[in-house]
Image (cartoon, rainbow, N blue to C red; front, side, top):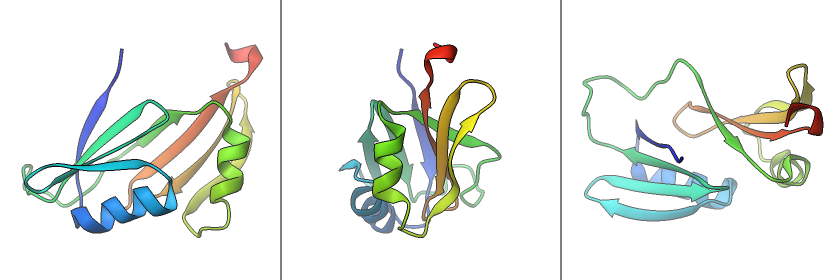
Length: 116
């Protein structure tokens, strides 16, 4: 099963640049006013359209599972967007998070053997 989330963004070009150059995602302009970003088996779609009559926002964290969270963290740790550093979690995994250019929290997680 896969999941795709449609999120409002401030600016699709700024969002495309952030996900491509900072996080290393593949990006595609998918329709008028939207950009799709994909990596690690996850896909997010951003739109600059005001479909919800609300500013960009989410009262939660978007989790993306990665194969090697330590290696991925090493590539991102000095880019200034890390919201919380790589850490072992009591519920069985290692994770870290970034705050993207729209204010969304995106966490990258790898399950440990004990959690699998």
